Image (tube, rainbow, N blue to C red; front, side, top):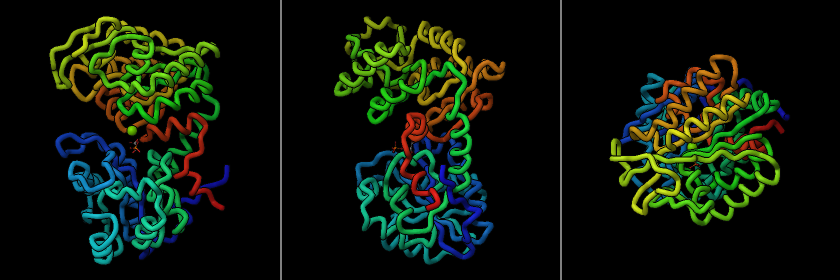
Length: 398
Ligand code: 3PG
Ligand code: MG
């Protein structure tokens, strides 16, 4: 593996340093609910400010549709960054153009500025060269500390590396070292847990994942598409009918290769997506047309826990249910607790990743006992699949 350029090689004093972070953190009513990604980013920011750099933060937030949308403003997240680093963070209302240029021009060495959501420009996701130029004009050096967005070849995660001297931030460096070690030769049998609500873009990679693991445990929104593929009614549940053929292919591939896929065997359903909404445990064939599957049921929990007892390594991305609203966090919390106990007893290596996953494991009080927690979800899964990550490749010393 070619070495990466890190901050050890960067001369940043007095320079404008564009730092790509992943500030795509969970929020509720405009408040950040889990600061893990910000805490992981803090050492890079602090090292750069203490070395006299002008630190300009870049990030996406959510999936806005290519234009400004107050719902996806980074302003509240910038405030949370200021709290974590214990230093003021200025904010510019656009990541390019006059607001960004004026705010950058006003900076002194040691200052921190956060620019508005890069995805407010559709050119970001297209890695558009003109947009890259506009971003590049704001800095002298680019530091990529967004491992969790490194599977995206976007302007701010990859394009900038073609225009400016590029370096890995400390969190990027730590993730690459830790995951590289953990994924190279995992203790077998290995299981992957894949869940969560971001189904498209993840479901299709499960096929490749099957080549690398012995057991694939599927939960959350992801499971519903598989249940639908097996002919079960899913009512109003999150489900991607377009992906049913893909789900069927994955089930067939598992059968042909003797790999095991673990799906829910029962569900907790409700008619509304709200905390403490009236709910019931349903058998898979009993989900009504107006009901939504919001968690896995008690028999499913037992089943997953018994699987964890048989394996040696679990790679976990995505919660089992709508963990952010009670009581639909039960499946995730109980399985996380079982995994944490097995880890503490030395029986299981637990590696988890993903914004929602980390937040769910913190909520369950299990994160501290896990072997390693990555900030990355999708990037972690792609690394697991054996894919090259564009935001990492660009950092290799040429
Ligand atoms: C994540 O939260 O997984 C990363 O920030 C990437 O977000 P994306 O899946 O919207 O590109
Ligand atoms: Mg994610």
